[in-house]
Image 1 (cartoon, rainbow, N blue to C red):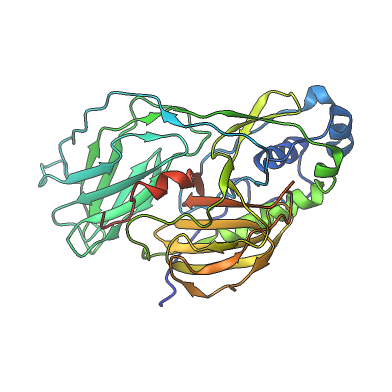
Image 2: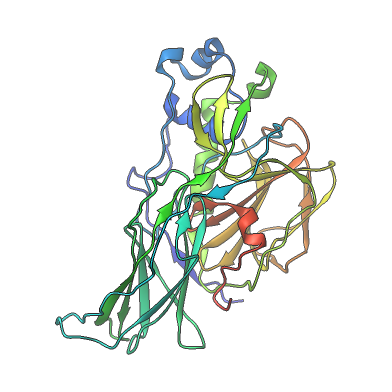
Length: 374
């Protein structure tokens, strides 16, 4: 397979930290790791701050191509609940297309699936732009390059992060260009970013669980995540739905807010925890190319697969890894075994799906297709 990648630019803050992380950053890493922070006294010892000074920060989305490292995750805390999208009324209508000169251009067609997107969820965008050789889509103020399809349409998948505030009016705009780069027009489709109701995960843990939560571990985790999301394979390799990587019970849902040791609700769980016996085979959720297979300080033994088109899946806390970077894998291939490496209180798989570095709910992808052909 030809290795065609879109290279990411450094984050606005200069990329991964190279010095001791701030106390707020350390708290964010811990809470997103789905581990319980220790008591206020131990927090002060770990982070150098008082209990009154502890808070949670959220990252600001950056223009693509940018790989914003997703938060760390690890947990087997027993928590569950269903998710639901708060209803909003949206009438999908395209605005008139105008060329660079202001003259009316042939009408473009935009298809959104779903027509409005929940926070922490993904949206597939397809567009037909007459006279365009290339196209890009603007979503949440960020431009994404669309990929041409054999049927004459362009395709992209985008995601709304859990930190994204709901927006009743969040249009999706597609711009087409000729082969020489001249714009042939821009058209918009009405859409919205809606709230999603998810349960709160109330975590309690002993000092033993958080003993390895050190500033150095936080720095190394963020540095590794920056490397993992610095580039993407261009062409999508998957079709249809993704597969569940192991049959375990969901013990922590995606996007659950964190109340740590009775504290305020803070950061969000960036994946789904599937509890299963240690040694249970873990399978690739879709075809792709392995881009990481090595330990991480917080996520433990981890495998990341690039599925093309900005989509990657992550499989964490493995007891064993059966693939290596560069391996091409089919859906269903065994890539490792369930374990409890890293920050974990019991054997489970922490499964993630990211879209251009934005963590989205993996469970949705089991029932809703986001590929270009769907």
